[in-house]
Image (cartoon, rainbow, N blue to C red):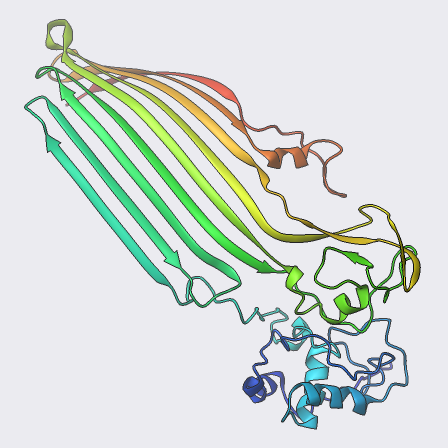
Length: 398
């Protein structure tokens, strides 16, 4: 049995010691926060790197053999003045020629643990929290009582520009209760709830020396990209790690309203029958808006007669669009009764009717012809139903 061993040049560092040594440059497991340094040979390959073939991210088939590894190391040293040759070699080993993220293979558990330095985990990140609560209770007279309350909470994640930015929720409750007499009473109530989350994301890539041309586009032709932050595929590829057009955001809003009426009476039919009824109507809406651009390939074809000759567009950036709202409405009617037979036994009965209507764009992806490759469609629809429930019980107390 033969084994082929590949040697890599880590500059004498373990991954942990390397990350500790480059903290002074602001480099974390996310890798360098910049584009491809100028001076890296376009023909550089993983096999040309001092020490042997490396499997770190950032190596592409576009690199050809025979490049001078010293030029690659020098390019990273120029990008980070003060970086040693050993540190540069370790950076190339762990993060690739283009300065990508640390590959999972270098972690003992095989998991990719890096995160964008601009992001703090919401559960441990810096946060400003504001809370407000108010309530009012008014006994207008012996029969009428009015109550109301307001709750508001807001969290701002002040030191994160990636991930959850802020979240807030608001709740309003109003209720009026009226007692006609000692046996009959009613109440009317309304609640409103609102929740909002603002998040930002970064679909960064790995820096590479050249872009991948498709169709008849020349990779370095000016204007080969429409609407992006760079106008040609080469510049976009070289700055994939820091391309501002890779950043996008979303805002999710949830609102729900509920209005209800309750009435109860006691002592009907020789003081043995108690009745209570509820009517409730609730409606909810979830909306999701987006900010930023999305890259679309082969969106349309337009001939460009520029300095690079006749080419065709293959990549266009268009504004991200909002998703359709998710909506639901629920109507519920309840009637409950208790008939006291004697001091030891009683009969209980109840009836409920409920009707739900909803719309949810998610179910479109479950229909035949709309599912992703390899996923069987279920043809499920957004829930819409009517429900009737009848219950009865006999209670005996020993």
